Amino acid sequence: MTDKELVEGCIREDRKYQKILWNIYSAKLMSLCLRYCKNQEEAEDALMEAFVRIYDKMESFRYQSSLETWMRRIAVNISINKLRAQKDIWKEISESEYELGYTDLGMEQLEAKQILQLIEKLPVGYRTVFNLYVVEGYSHKEIAEMMAIDEGTSRSQLAKARKTLQEMLVNLNITR
Amino acid sequence: MSQDPFQHIADILNNHEVRPSANATFEEVMNRRKKKRRGIFWWFQRTGVGLLILGILGGIAYLNIQPSRISNSQSKYTQNQSPNNPASDSKSETSQNKAVQSAEDLKTNPNRTSGNSATYNNPQKKSKTGLLGIFQKFNTRRDEILHGTPRTLAIDQVQTPGALQIWSPNPTQADPKEGSNIYANGGSPMALSNVYDFGAKNYINGTYFDLQIQEDPDAYLDWAFELPQSGLRTKKLPWYAEFSAITGSDNQIQFDANENLSVLGTNYMAQYQLSFLREFKSSDLWGIGVNYTQWVGNGEWRKREYLNIWNYDTQTVAINIPGLPTQFVNQLDSHMTREFNVRTGSIKYNIDKISLPISYRGFARLFKTNFRYAAQISPGITRISKGSYFTPTEFMPIEQSRRFSFGAKVGMGPIIPVGNGLSIVIEPALMYESFIHPQKGLQGNVFGGLGISMMWRLK
Image (cartoon, rainbow over all chains, first blue to last red):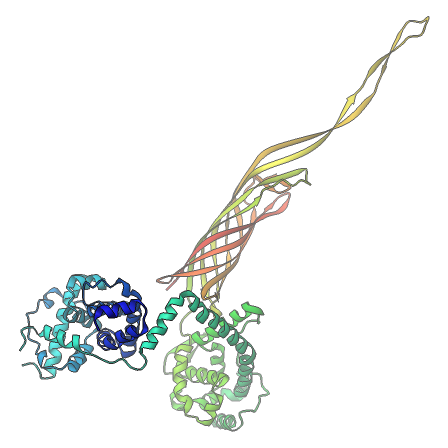
């Protein structure tokens, strides 16, 4: 079944197509929500909220990107909205600290589950920027707009996230 | 090895899948959509009506069940704990034995009733009926829960060392010298640990947990240290500063047809007030302040006058008798006519006055909105008074300043919290302003108006 058929079925409010959409993408989006939310319950809440919005806004899908990308963007936005309610998630660091060199994190040896566990341990601010920048591919400018922060803050959070991850890897004796 | 470790992570995570649990299902998503589409109606249906029913049921339950339980339990558990009981003032072995015996009595004979007066001094207000009564009960109850069981209870209990050892899990911990001191009512310092013990246990005993405690004496030990943490008020009640501005009017738009002297016009008042209020139990605020009121009026008077006018009808009558010369006689006569005369004129006055209001503020929650109700009386003195003050049927000059005045205000409006301890209240109000006229006595107007108050919680 193509994306187009799925989209048109959902626009027609055909429950069969809606269910198929859920079956195909719920696990992927759940993984995404888990990376942003603080626990399973909040992630599931964000997931369901995202699907409600996806079904409601399906008519506005313009095929300018893949359906999955569009859905991921919605899920990210909803997860970010939940984060915005939290205060003081940004830990400021100095400019010099985030001008770190490009370091091999040694993460290619890790499985997804291990990576997820490491990322989960990051402070919320680091984790969010790391996810947005590294996994979702947003630029610092886009992240700054989404999170209502400075671009510099986004950069610093990412650098700090990398540094923290590296330290965690050292502790795990994985870094070569 | 990948050149870009980030890309590796992105690839892994983008393809990673986690199945949601049974709580997050397609059906649940569809239910959410339905609720969302029903929107405000669903919200009202579920929250509004549901809360209303719960509120009514809770109120009824509270009003009917809770007070009797509290009073029964308190009289049951506070026997021989009166401060007037001299036996309880000593820490002698006898009193300890009595205490132990009392404790056993409590465990074995919980239904025993006390002949002594209960020391539980719950500062409940006189109950009101209807919705207001429920709110008042709610406020009182909430205050007890948030700010602790009434402090008088704690004091009464602490004054009985014997009883202390009944309930303390470890009598040696109940050292008055340890822990923070709190000051309540009489201002005497008390060991916080003692109060914790007594406040918590009596609170528990007096309300919900009688049976559990009797069956398992250890069950309440944890509670004893948890509940009072939020239950005791160890700091002073807060003060608030309030600045309010209000304006109102009182209009007479028609002449009174039945009165010869009638005045129509508009009375306006504007009042600016600064008050300092202190919170008391049940979240009621009382305070004093100062206000400046400008009170002006302008209008038109009408005076209807009936004038009786005498018209003299003097005639000269010629009397002509043949053979005699004609004679003239002035015949005096008159008649009265009544004329209706209407006179009008403009009238105005201006009164400035300064008062010292004594204010009360209370809080209620209606339809999920917080409301503040306010009442105050404000004796004061007029500073400037000019012109002629008028009532619908008379007017009088008020050139003399420095007259005693009196004002009052009642109002109720929603509270809008702004943050940092600042709240704004939009307050429709009914106001009364008056002054003493040297000849006519008390003169005043009732104004309807709308005001705004800003209330800061002071540190």
